Length: 172
Ligand SMILES: Cc1ncc(COP(=O)(O)O)c(C=O)c1O
Image 1 (cartoon, rainbow, N blue to C red):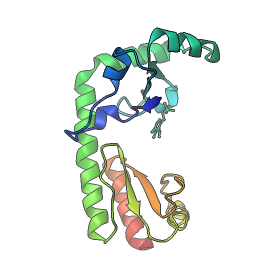
Image 2 (image 1 turned 30 degrees about the horizontal axis):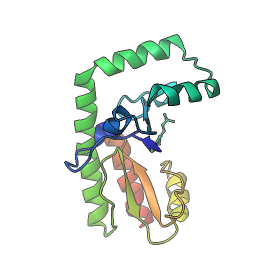
Image 3 (image 1 turned 90 degrees about the vertical axis):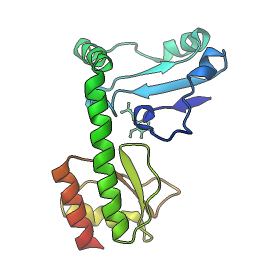
Image 4 (image 1 turned 180 degrees about the vertical axis):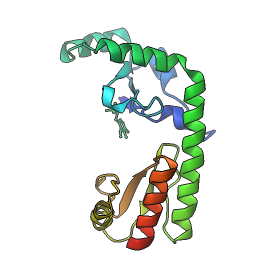
């Protein structure tokens, strides 16, 4: 089993449990984590897997195993910078909740989120919203079949979020 823990660092739901104990128990579980989210270095293409050694050895031939040196140092620095990690978490949650409140006040349903994005119910096909946002210079998430009437919205900085809210008011 593969468990994608891309958003692991954002989770605040007390009922959440990470999957590390399954790996430590020796089960056939692979956990993947990425530096693209809480560490904000998506373009660097850096992540890692946690699994028992036999599974890692079986996967190794399928990887180039090569990471750019600058990226490697950036990843190591990110892991050590707990202050930055806490700042990103708090700021993301604060901005996300502000956006979610705004979107809900306009009558849209929003799924509970423990990530740096939220899913809003567009009722109509979300592709219509996507095009309308694009015309206004706002990029939102792609389709996530089968949820074709839900739109994935990533939390940006304050100015970007305001542009999103303004565009949504015009579209809705
Ligand atoms: C669930 C999930 N896993 C992984 C990723 C991407 O990670 P990476 O940038 O390391 O490919 C994303 C990005 O949107 C994601 O939503």
